[in-house]
Image (cartoon, rainbow, N blue to C red; front, top):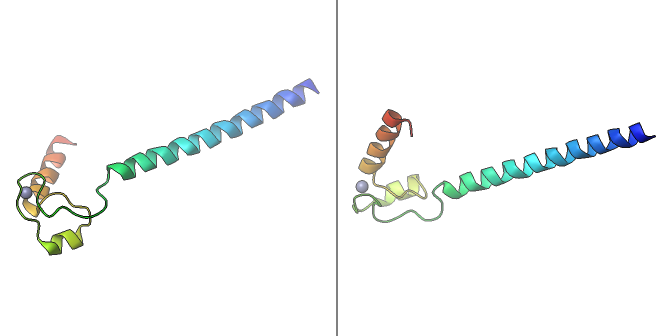
Length: 82
Ligand SMILES: [Zn+2]
């Protein structure tokens, strides 16, 4: 009987751990989403202040940089690895 209780508790703990892991995963996803640009795109480049063409704002919702700065930023990421 005691052994059964122990097993049950272990299973329950495993389930709680699983739920916690899922919740943490959800939170990580939510945080990741929060970091992603969302909402209306900026009308002016965040980096150089140049006007972002409307076509780009529509093509890349939530963009904050003009194409030039975006390309520089992506090249820098590729070179530096972040
Ligand atoms: Zn720019």
